[in-house]
Image (cartoon, rainbow, N blue to C red; front, side, top):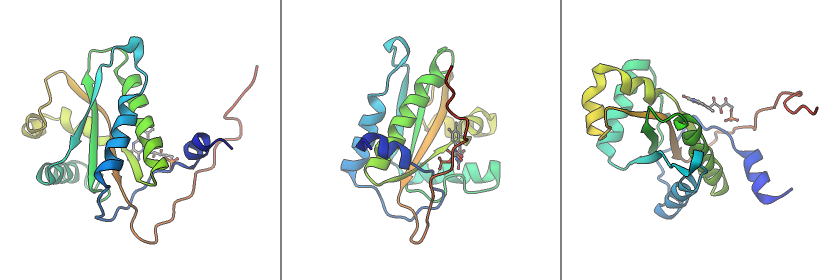
Length: 171
Ligand SMILES: Cc1cc2nc3c(=O)[nH]c(=O)nc-3n(C[C@H](O)[C@H](O)[C@H](O)COP(=O)(O)O)c2cc1C
């Protein structure tokens, strides 16, 4: 099988991370992969917010825990938010392409990842307006999705999920 397709087919979501950080060089390659995603009419309406600050990451983790009653970030050491103006009609599509590119790049570099969906709801809640401001989000910004990155805890085994038999149809 082609190497890229092999990587795509081996990607899995990881939900248990160790503290081990992803080396800078790998992190920047994953971000570059996100940057080179396609965008509707090449408008490039999204951007990536990398949470580098440990204290901000902790604030997000605690806010998520408060709202959703669990560790939505699975202990991962890195979090990136993919965001843009909510009035852009192709915002979700563009953000999804960016995120998928990042998942694939992470897999290629043997870095674990997972889509985190709760940031959107969290940051729409007026209770977390201070956090929204801390993240520098404009009023019209929407966090479409986020990605956690890191390395799975020792012993964690994740199998590629079986796909539905009728996933591909021909006409
Ligand atoms: C739009 C979208 C939202 C998701 N949100 C979450 C999430 O909030 N938390 C989570 O653990 N996984 C989330 N996932 C990951 C899915 O649960 C996962 O992709 C699915 O179970 C298939 O498993 P796989 O990624 O290992 O193939 C999301 C995936 C997508 C595409």
